[in-house]
Image (tube, rainbow, N blue to C red; front, side):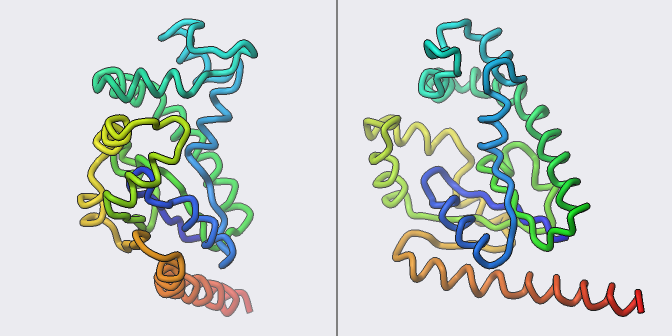
Length: 212
């Protein structure tokens, strides 16, 4: 199984790239979805948030109000660091368990969709890293469309809260430029994904021959 780490800057279009790759036969795990699951009422992250911030971060239905938490951590670097230190080990264990399940199932290519792949040090879990890039202009345009990011100041603060996309691109094995038309992006994905498909096929054929 090939484990592919997919990352990039905020609003660079990682989800769109990941969705397209699943059409090519890959499976994927989303760090954000694991976090959402763990933050459900009574979950491990839910308890961490409530112990740290109190019930003021809860909705009337006792769910975590993600906008309230985001407003706290994106405005306070030290608080963001504390939250990362508290939550990343939990999420990593969950991710490792899911990876093990896919290995048993024989999944050929597994994508780990992790926005903070490098920041969290999770790149040691993958065989290759793809970074989805977008120009700052494109990031800002997309961020301003989000309900939770109402001002340019908030948008820039969220971009600055992560490792620069340029640094991620320097460390990546593959860079997908998603600044322009989707047709250009999808063409890049097809070219980059083909060698992985070939590698999977070669490994399968070698295993099959050994079994004969």
